[in-house]
Image (cartoon, rainbow, N blue to C red; front, side):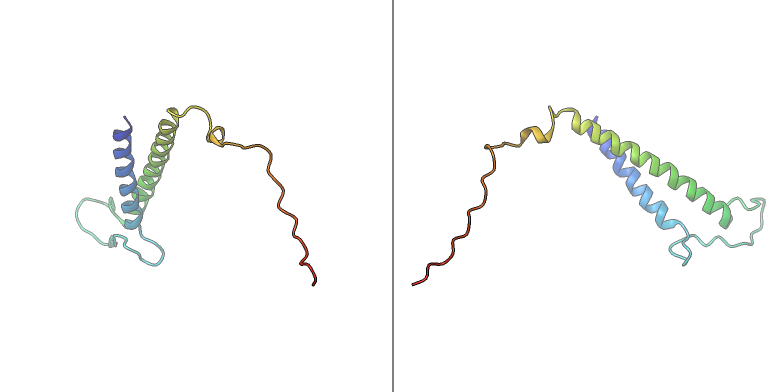
Length: 107
């Protein structure tokens, strides 16, 4: 189960990085240009605005999937542990105070 969830998590992470890199930033970035013209019956289906909306929605969905798989992996990893990590700390009694520095002897 963990291996399958980890594989899905990695695929979602890679897809999320790619979708973010494809998006058009204010400086241009690696975005798909999407010219304003265009013949045919598409009617602006993949126009700049339509592409940006699609990529924004895809980013949100992939981000939600990334969070869900991250939390699921953390819960699965924690399920086999008994108690807390703090229970494993060994205390050897009260801490000893630091030694008091001695003044150098005068000859």
